Length: 480
Image 1 (cartoon, helix red, strand yellow):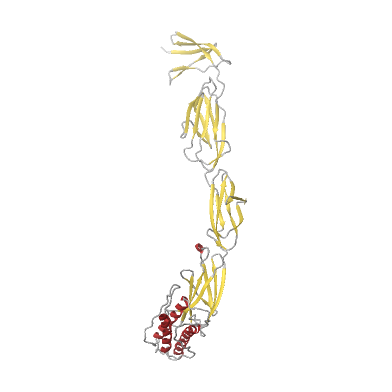
Image 2 (tube, rainbow, N blue to C red):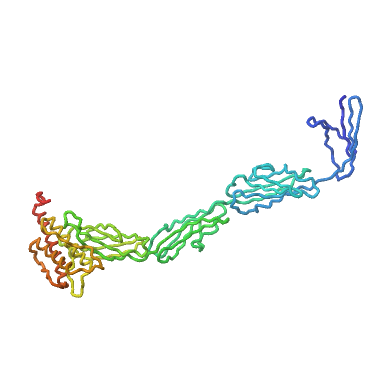
């Protein structure tokens, strides 16, 4: 036997029912009453192909659920800026008291146009009261700039909630800051310094630029500020800040040096390493160490007798230049010094001979270690030169490292006298030779004789060598 019809009577109205093959149950869609009712009768009647029928009765209470659930976004705050690219979105889903309850599966969470749901990665909802408390944490970092989310949910009765929306902004990037002037480590003699550069922020926007905490004006992305420096090292910290508090920092260290270079001494002496001897001299320039020694970059240039001389820097602020012997054996030296800050100094001196001899001693003056070293050095130089030219066989003893602490003995002074006399004897008679007096004292006249005689030997040796050159001896290959 088979059923030919199944009907249901609801609230006085009959409705045909159809078999749901998936569930094996008969179903019908009925019209609910317009108002809530209690004990509404239901009659179900089934008839088979023999005409036999059976029925069942029941009653139900009809309740109306017309209040939709409410969605409330608690964070982020609308229009706010956040430095976290994975800023969580927190919200609640709440149904009314006695309602059908929130249908979590119906959750619609649309982030920047992408539809997500209650089971999407990053979504976590916990039952709470008449609904749920939810937090969505983006599994990956969101892009810089603006973001929006819209949320809806339904209850079990099918009522759809309000649409909750919020927009916020992400900024994880520091402002762009560039300092174009000055260069770090600049050394200058100008106390007025201009600090300039560019600053911008493409996301939350630039809020301020400061130099050593003091704010500066930024116009069209550029800034320029004039400051007055103190002598010595000056430190500047430039900071750009955006709306979310990100900062970019550039530091500059600038040295103000207004002290010009200072010449300590300028001397001339024979080139003891020249081959052959007698043709060149060394000019030695000693500069005072700069007060800002950690920026001691100085250059020394100059001319000798009007011709450019190449000065080479050595140790302890010393510069030297090798120059050839002049025809009249005088050397007019003009010097120019410049430091890294641009400060300059000039100095000029004329030496009457390449030995830097002094033959204008006066009675109040006294012999010091530098004078003694000069005399002994010149003696050694002339002795070596005479030896080179084939003069003299006696060994000569000299001392060229006298210090302020040394006290010359009478035997030392006697040795100096004998050395100068021996040089004259090697070269035979020299015009204008000043006789050296041997006594128990040494005065300015004897000092003048020492230095003058050494100068004469140098002068006549130079003339002798020049005579060999111009007479053809060297050109003929008879002189090495």
